[in-house]
Image (cartoon, rainbow, N blue to C red):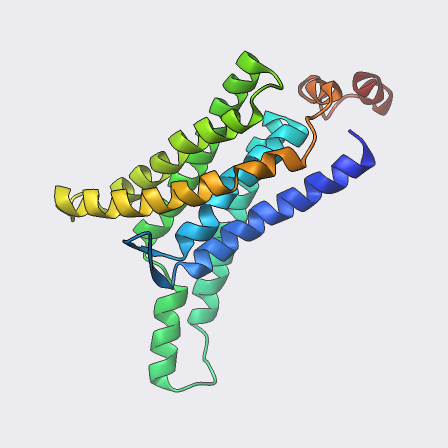
Length: 226
């Protein structure tokens, strides 16, 4: 990988994590988009799937999986930090403290649902993307993003709703919560597809990453990268 592409990979990775954080924060804002009631979360979150695809294209599936898991850990650490500071003595009124605590402390079941749905759907996105590349190679790059998004974005929503609300909602409530939000997310996911053409395909030397072990001497690692 060239230095230029390495720098681009770093930027894409940072953008991926940032989009995850922005989506989480924007979840506080309710909107009506395309006639459906949803949250601003549905604008930023679909971008993470295309950014994951961009990282995958630059560095391969192993780096993409690492990025997914790293983002999940960062999210959990951030939520733990919010939970800690929400319990500290604030320089505000009691009413303001209660309001802030409600914003910073998500329900445990909701937190688990969000993390599980994101990790599973993003990993599925990785597998679908990989299968498409194995089948079509460098052709139809838009297709690898479109197909992976069409499957992983609805999957993310289904998993989240099932884990967060199963047993407490009726079937009608599930359908209503799934359809509108999923359509909105798919629209923004499709809009982001051209981003895949902004990065180059990863070079073949990334294949050797799986052959290098932490115990290998530097000379062996260098030879694997040649």
